[in-house]
Amino acid sequence: MKIATLLSYAGGFKEAVEEIVGLEKAGLDVVWVPEAYSFDAPTAMGYLAARTETVTIASGILPIYTRTPSVLAMTAAGLDYLSDGRAMLGLGASGPQVIEGFHGLPYTAPVAKTREVIEICRMVWRREKLQHMGDHFTIPLPQDQGTGLGKPLKIINHLVREEIPIAIASLGPKSVETTAEIADAWLPAFYTPEAAEAVWGESLKTGQKLRDPNRAVLDIFAGGAVGIGTGMEPHREKGRAGAALYIGGMGARSKNFYNDIFSKSGYAEEAKLIQDLYLSGKKDAAAAAIPEDYLAKSSLIGEEAFVTDRINALKESGVTTLNVSFIGSDPSERIYQCEQLKNLVEKL
Image 1 (cartoon, rainbow, N blue to C red):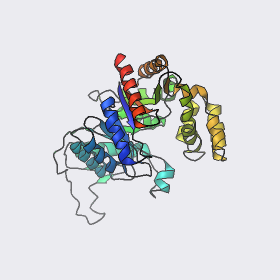
Image 2: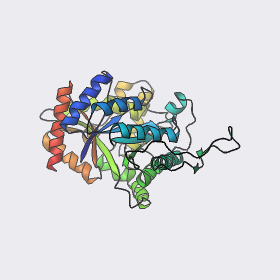
Image 3: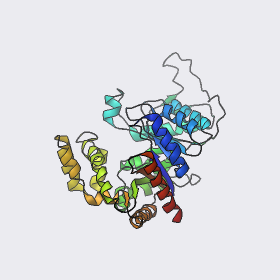
Image 4: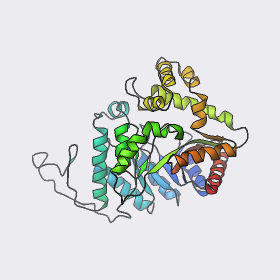
C-alpha cells in the first residue's frame, strides 16, 4: 500500500512544502494539493515539483466547471513535464454552493461533464487533433458560433506521458459508477471499510464491469488521521469538528452529499441530528454528536496492533493507498508518525 496526504498550508505555504519534503523522505508517496475557493492548486503544484523528488503531485481537486477541458489537460501535462512524470490530475464536481456562489457558473450535469472532460484530456495527451462533439463540450467551436475560424489543433509539446493518471473525488452512486469505469483513482469521503460495501459496493461493481480491461485496477484512497503509540486514542476527538462541518454544514439541507454517505454508513439518526444542530448554529453540540464508534473506525489512531488491524481492514475492503493526516504538534512529530506508518505498511 502507498501513503498519501493532503497539503495543509494554514501555517504558511512554504513551511507546508518543507514538511512535505521531510514526509517524502519518511515514505510519503502522494501529496494532494487542495483548491476549494482558496489559492489555486496548480501554482502550488509547480512549486512542489521543484522542491520534491519522488512524490506524486495530485490536484485534490480541480473542479470540472472552472477550467476548460483543454486547460485541465494542458495543466496536467505541464506539471508532468516539470515533475518528470509525477503528476496526477484530481477532478471533482465540487458543490453548487462553491461553483455557483464563488465562480458564478451553473452546477449542471456533473457526471456527464466529468466523462467528457476525461475523454478530452486523454485526446490532448495522445497529441491528437482535438475534435470532440459532445452534449456539453464541442471542440472546435461550430462554424455558426464565434468567428467561424476555429480548427482542430493538437498540443504543441511532446509530453512525458500520454497517460497521466486521473483521480475523481466522487460521492454519489452514478458518479462513483463512472469513476470505477473510466478513472485511474478514486478519492471517496467518510470511507470506513465496514460500510464501504453497503454505501458504494453496487456502484463500484457496475462501473468495473464496463471498465477497459487494459486499464489498471482502480487505485482507492482512504484512511484517516494517523497517531501510532500508547495513549494516542484521545487524539481521535480532534476529528469531531471537521466531521460535523461536512456532515452538518457542507451544503444545503436538501443537498449535502457527505450527510447522505454518513447516513448510509449506519448513522442515519446521527446524521440528521448533526445536521439539525449544525444548521441551527449549535456547532459544538453537532461535533459532540459524532459517534465515538465512527471516530475509531475512520482513524488510524491507537496502539500499533489497533492501527495494523485498521490497515488490514482497509486493504481487505479494496483500499490501495492510505490517504491520511499525521498527528503531531510540529513537523518532526508528524514526520515520525509517517515513518511509523511506513514501517507498519511494509510489514503487511
